[in-house]
Image 1: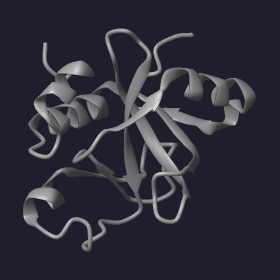
Image 2: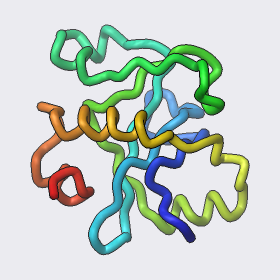
Image 3: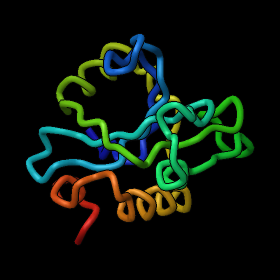
Image 4: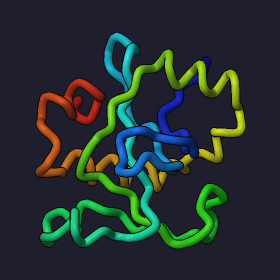
Length: 134
């Protein structure tokens, strides 16, 4: 399978309260390729969770224009990486290819990458593990 980095998926996730159908982007892969790092795309900025300016600044606003995977302006949450098993994602994609709803273009990916690299809420060792430091 080709690299999943930059792939946008839409599927049920269990780590939200309540579990929900979410859009998310695969942004990194561990050196052993066993796990992938992803970030969520949110419809709006949740002020209960993102209560300070630092957290709010770690969200990148994406307009839907030119981004087929979005229905409306959305916020990409670069304040935390969600780690998923590569085999789990590959199995889901194999069984339901429609979960892939698009790919980030290079410019958007660079913006996201820069934001994650600058994140104050993601530990350096985690960023390093998923390729955010050379």
